[in-house]
Amino acid sequence: MLKSSKTESIVVSALRARSHFGKLLRQVERERRSLVIAKRGTPRAVLLSIRQYVRLAAPEPEILRALGEDSRRQGTDVLTSKQIDLLIKKARARKAKR
Image (cartoon, rainbow, N blue to C red):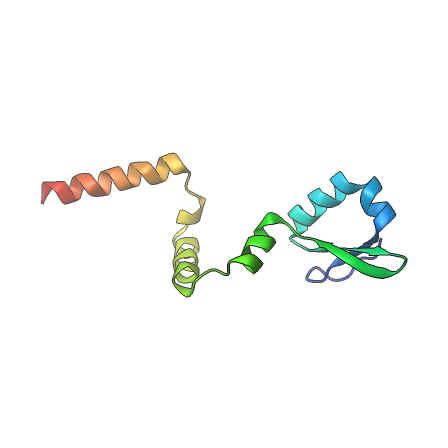
């Protein structure tokens, strides 16, 4: 297996990809890097994490990117669904009182 810098792809042979698929799949997800699968030295396919694929297939609109950055700055990007629901419920209750 050839490794490059953290931003570059990992290149593996088709045989290695087949025999170590689970391990490589976890590595792609963990390191957020793509995996190039080569057969006889020729690149044939690419394995991407689902997150990378979604970014390529449906790029994030600018407004969502800005909201995400704001959420990270405020620390709200780590809230659970239950915590978010509770905050919404509290905000609606405050609004209803006005």
